[in-house]
Length: 314
Ligand SMILES: *[C@@H]1O[C@H](CO)[C@@H](O)[C@H](O)[C@H]1NC(C)=O
Ligand SMILES: *[C@@H]1O[C@H](CO)[C@@H](O)[C@H](O)[C@H]1NC(C)=O
Image (cartoon, rainbow, N blue to C red):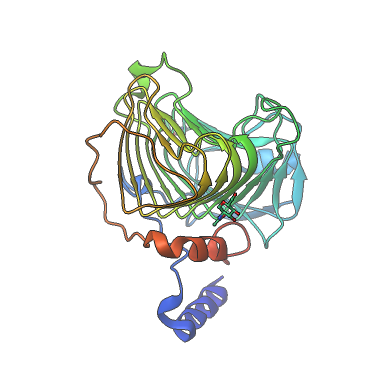
């Protein structure tokens, strides 16, 4: 692992300033004590569903490496506290099922190929959980099945908090990422659901990139690339800061029309799309430091660095 990090550092030094820091993890997951996953714990490598399920349970620090694509059984794979789940190489992960963190904390998902989880199981679901970092994964479904055949690619609900979603590819899916599962959960969700989405590539998605109820979202330097029905949907009082993103061929890139959501948008580039009138929000700054990349650079930086196979080591 150290050798690989060392190699990365040398490459970065050789290539110079053009290299994006692909490990950067700013965002809400750095608050509330930070998000370290299984750092310092034992490393296990798994190749079967049964071994994966066993390896990710328990509340002590652990790093679980997946080798190859594991076929799920449609049910959730429940992940315990202080866990890093990481794929080896560029083609390791889970198909036909997904992960759930329920009443948990401090989990990292990285470098995983995640695909085609039939409803009611999301590819990743975060329920009543804190400090989660979802980084450099590729989420893939298809648009040929009915819109409700697969469940969400990355959904968060029931008071989940302090989440960062960075450098992922979300592609070919109907309802991508839902933050806040219902209009009736304001009691548990208001003041929570604080989430950062940065440097993600949303490609050929129908809607929910993301859709937010009640929460607080900082959405910066993402590439919205062919979104067919609606993009960022801020509703039910959600406050959203949307900056330095590239929106290309996106129908309704930003909406605040359902049950009174709010958004502040600045320094975005809209190509082949226009923004409707939005209800101006109050989220104009966030309580952590970060470096946004300018919207004009996003269509090259994000596809080159997002998704699986771009980070090595843990
Ligand atoms: C996991 O973390 C949550 C949140 O801190 C805690 O409530 C729960 O008891 C922990 N689970 C275990 C098995 O320690
Ligand atoms: C904008 O839309 C036109 C017409 O559909 C299309 O030909 C063009 O490729 C689009 N531009 C981009 C940057 O996708």
